[in-house]
Amino acid sequence: MNFSLSSWGRLTRTTISVSLSLMLLACATPTMEPVVLNLVAINDLHGHLEKEKFSYTPRGEQTAKTVVGGGIETLGANLAAWRKEDKDLIFVGGGDLIGASPAISSLFADEPTLHALGRMGLRVSALGNHEFDHGLQELQRQIHGGCESPRPERACQFDGRFPGKQFSYIASNVLSKQTQKPFFPAYHVEEVKGVKIAFIGAVLRDTPFMVAGDKVKDLSFIDEAEGINRTIPVLKEMGVKVFVVLIHEGVSSPDVFDQFSCSQIKGPIVDIVKRLDPAIKLIVSGHSHTGFVCNVEGRTVTQAQMYGHLLTRIAIKLDGATHQVMDIQAKNLVMEPSSAPAPEELSNLLHKAREGSKAIIAEPVAKLAVPVITRKLNAAGESALGNIVADAQLAAVKDMGAQIAFMNNKGIRSNLETLAGNISTYGQNATVFPFGNTLVLMSLTGAQIRRLLEQQVWLDEESQDGRNVLQVSDGFTYTWDAKRKVGERVIPESVKLNGVLLDDQREYRIVANNFIAGGGDRVPMFLQGKNVIDTGIKDIDVFMAYIKQKEKAGTPVGSDKPVGRVQRQN
Image (tube, rainbow, N blue to C red; front, side, top):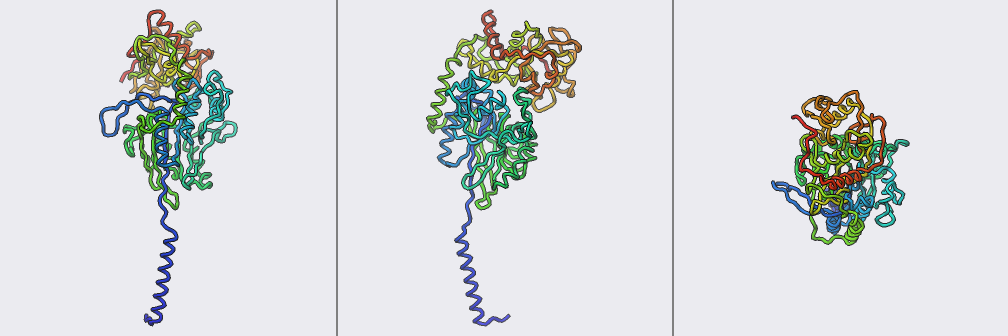
């Protein structure tokens, strides 16, 4: 092809014009910088307002380090410091922020904790199973405010009024039985740095097994992944590009809390995560009281242990133009006391809670035989404290015909500690028994009791170390074998009451708290009991009366180890 000089000039001018236009266009639409969203997550606070002693082992070290940390002043100081780095930081929760709380919070129906979380700027949290401990009416009051409560002696005793929590509780998989629609908000949307980010909540499907049955009788708990995935189409229509799951369900991990991208977690949440919509890249979990930052098939899953001992800092890096997730970085940080000052409003709140509860908490109850009675389980699933709790409950209703007491270990929330001289206080006892459960009498046959014992040692993640084994009263003994097949683990000839083999046909009068009597902790045999009577007697009152009586008789309770009512082979 031949070009004339004139045609070459026209082509050159055209090329220069196009190039100049492209340069101007490039200047007019510069490449957009990535957007970083900063989150901080907490889970399983359980009303722990005070600093406390705890131990942890950092990555790469062999020796555990013990510190005094956590507490709302430490948490608040760190959050305030991090907000100076990014004023748009979002503080979120993985559930069980209240419930099973120390006396400083539980004496006031956990209102101090809800106040504190609001003042720390918590924006949203999943519901946990312990939020349901005192029933739907009380949870609704704690959410919306007011003083009409099934616990009138505790509600509105902190401030004289209660306006309700200042953050969103969400649960996509909790439905009203009447409407089959989510009873609580399923999600919460924030717009930060021009980006819409959705937090989708869920609580473990097994919540009805962990709460007294009448507390959640009007609710259905559906599959967690199903509930979460239902929200995605609606949220996408709203223009949401970033999806974060806040779920109260957990796992176990052999890795240390500050291991980067661990991949060895196991437990129910792993299956849930694998079934989530592909748009979900970040899952903040709770429930298992474990600290980890793990990767499950390309998704980041985190948990910050419990009681405010850790917080999880998370940075989500987004494409500046499309707002698609490019990267997620997360790390668990130990909440040692900060050099930053605690926010004054949190210090004032803590002081008020201390002063308001001090007289009750410090009230001496009884002298014990040892400084600490531990809830730590031996290989068979028995604890020294469990022995005494079961004995106390049997003694309380023995004149009503009770022969055997059963107590769930998870209902014993801490060791029973003492002050100088082995004196236990009301506050220490209240920490052991925070639920206000009542004693329930019922009749079961010998065959049903043996079936009950089998149910507690099912082959699952929890029963392998005896954590589901019930604590039993003096005179009741048996042996179980972890290597036998499910349904045949309890050795029949070992099940005895006062040395006599249990008679399958005979009815025995047993006592248990209202939680397990209602089928909680996956022991449904209690639901087949006959002649059921809820005595209305509270577990904490029974226990304190028992240890007082023992001290008065000159035989204070307490042992360094369980007495061996339950034996385990293999």
